[in-house]
Amino acid sequence: MIQKNITQTTEGVEIHLSGNIEKSKLEAMASNCNSGGTCSCECNSDLKDHVKHVNVSGEDGNVTLSLIGETLDASKVEAAMSECDMEKYL
Image (cartoon, rainbow, N blue to C red; front, side):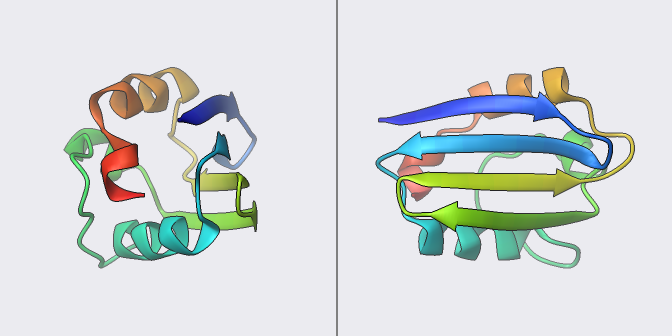
């Protein structure tokens, strides 16, 4: 099971993920969601338009996904993530 903690930052939104998660799989998923990529999860298309870049940091079991975009809102990201079954892709 993956635990999520979503926080607002000055650059966008950070999503801290812990539990059964591999950093390399999240990096592969994130690279598809960056500008010009084809996101494979059921992302909210309105939200995706606000993401300028995705950074991944940390290590297996404790990974931070940083969504960069001035107009991103943590509550909207949290709502979108509740619709997306990330564990299916990770």
